[in-house]
Image 1: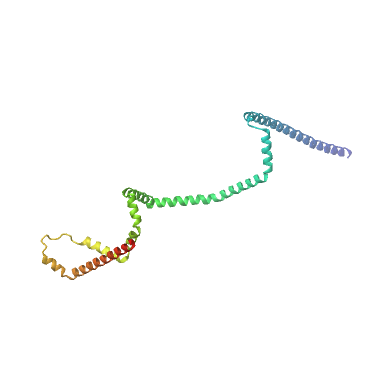
Image 2: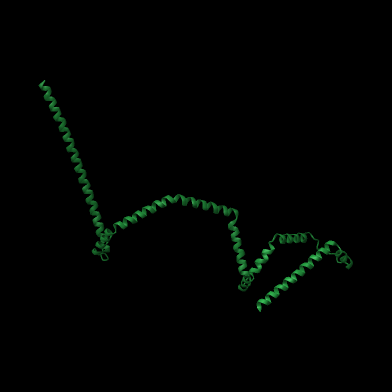
Length: 233
């Protein structure tokens, strides 16, 4: 019985020794890793130092220790300002990231619309309008443009009157009659045949309309001349 207790005690001691040995091995491994890290950091630091020496050697004539110290103090005094600048940059970055899909979608819509305009011929139409404008510019002098500016009101009023429905209807009727009328006249037209034509109701109405038109035109011309004389006086 006593032998069994002694063996258990020995086993327990061996177990504890194994734990201690494992811990010692871990500590040894950790120390080895730290030494390797220290060696690596030493080599990196040495390389950085040597590189800094070489780089600073190129600018040592322009570099002043006081300037570096002044820059360091200035950076420390403006830490809050730099922090705000960085915050704004982050906000701008977030804004650009959020708006990028919208901008991309807008560009795609614009490209589609431009393609639609191109297929419908808008660009070709604009090109031809430019040619027309070039022809107008090369065909008229500056005096012509000046006269146009002086009479633009009269021209616009004339166009306005021409676009009235009754005037357009009358012009359309005149054009239709001109297209359908036979302009070939027999060379042997007698005075009697002309008088016979004048005796028709249509001819009499046409002459009445023509006379009324000429009468009103003369009256309007007289009124305009009278108005011009009054302005000149």
